[in-house]
Length: 69
Length: 274
Image 1 (cartoon, each protein chain N blue to C red):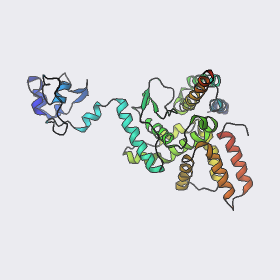
Image 2 (cartoon, chains in turn brown, orange):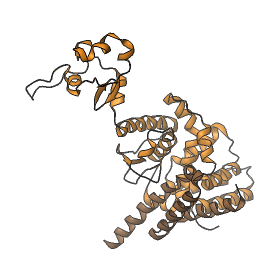
Image 3 (cartoon, each protein chain N blue to C red):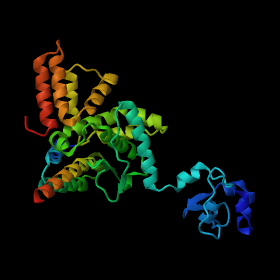
């Protein structure tokens, strides 16, 4: 596995773990899907990243509804 | 159940044990290769269903048809089986950690889920439906069960200190998994999960927590497990304070390396630049 790929994966992981707003979460999820499509051998290893995105999305959506209400 | 296998259709099944043993669950009842099957009503009523719709089925204990346990398990839906399995995993997790579950008993199998599992803040548990037939479900169930016993699992704390939750839960999942698996009486190879964990997205969190644990001079094995159980047992927002306090209370601990390790870890775990 190349260093470039490892660095790119680390950047992607940071993007996923840092995402808090709805926009950031959507962008991170898109990036994660694109990565997995390009590297299907890593799907099972990275799948749990979707967990935190789903959690953060639940929080962000609740806050959006709260602000709107 | 011989009386229920009357007639020409069941003749071979009735007389040939090897044919009888080819039975399988189908359409909420049992069937055999090449067509013979039993009407579900026959199993429920122990014969022909009564004419009166107010009648109640015989209690299972008195039912003349001795339906074996495997039959009921084979008839379970994925949801019912997964629910039972999560309940069992949770029971073991509570026993190991000494913590109380806040799972509300609701399990949802999510079709086409991108995640493996998650625990919404409503205290239900969601599991990807494609996972429940695979051996991959066990680490996910243990992970979600640990969220279920995590103290103060709230959206506010999770948002601000998510690494302190996901890192602790995932590390503890890996530490207690062999015990849980053993108590469940199943024996999959640990290596199939370990390989997947090499690139796990929460490894950054785990590495950060491990740096602090080592800086505190807490050894591996049982002490390591207790370290993470202790963290899981207090509200997420109080976890950084607990470790900081432990660092300052240890007389012989070199202060500077600990503070460095804690500060660097804290930045990773709270997702704030150091």
